[in-house]
Length: 250
Image 1 (cartoon, rainbow, N blue to C red):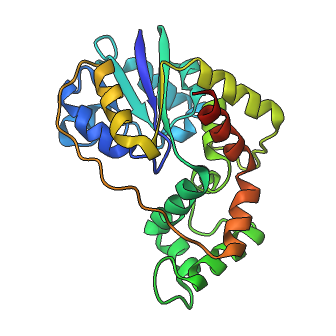
Image 2 (tube, one colour; image 1 turned 90 degrees about the vertical axis):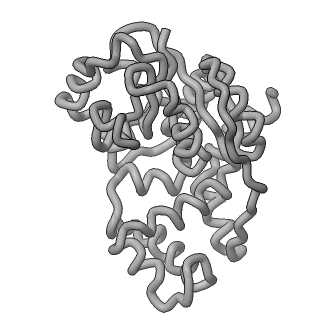
């Protein structure tokens, strides 16, 4: 059985992957292809796998697949449909409003998107910045971002864990998708939380019998204007429900 790390953006997954690199590229396939020894395992835009047959072929043809114990990337649960053999997943969840807030700031790496959000703002994350984001959402703008990135603003955890097609433009989350996400979450070998990061990382290292020192910084909480918080709660309704579901069942 192989384990797939369903890497939800802004949950500490990139740092975790760097700690797990000691497994080597034959045992750990990191679809991001970093550091250098992972370049042969790189698969660009893994979020598009459900409509990209070439990418599906690359997964099956990877010479490290027979020996790998772990693979990771920003894929949805549906990636299991495109790989051979027995696969189980683990993931890290994060309080939805904080995850989304962090994600919004992160994707300002897109210059076009950054120009939209920083128009008239003094700095990243000030009140004007968040008002510009509200406008971006209300106008249903696509400026500067691909579909899978825009999905990151609303119910991303539910979409990814349920196995939705993250490249689909007009993806709508409903109660049935939430239930599928809950079912898939229950079937995972491990689910951790960003809010309990030290324990989460240690538990995951134990899954692979990896011993390593790692960093666990103090949890920082971002604040947004009340109107932005209200909007984020509205468009992340299902993620909030999914997160509550997991926390309450622990």
